[in-house]
Length: 129
Image 1 (cartoon, helix red, strand yellow):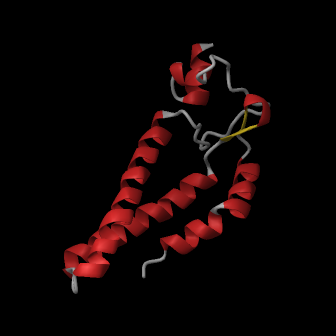
Image 2: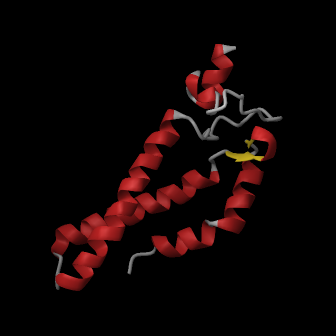
């Protein structure tokens, strides 16, 4: 059903992986769960990739060669930190693939797994220096 595919995966095309197998799950997802192939999640991943490239290149440059970045640099750094904090929240509601091409869509299980895997590292990395 096209409407179900759009609700679950964001697009009809996104309902299938590269092997044309359907990613299935046993439970109906909450309305706030972000599916891995949804347009929102794809755009967010692109934004996060750009922010990581910025952090990996400009932050060492500014630290090594610029004494005082000024107010503009401080504002940019706080905005980047805020977006990384928003990423923590998004990770708590993002479905992920488990064994046998199934998606985990239950919020409690998603949050539990994220909390015990990447949460603390992400939280430490979010605090400004």
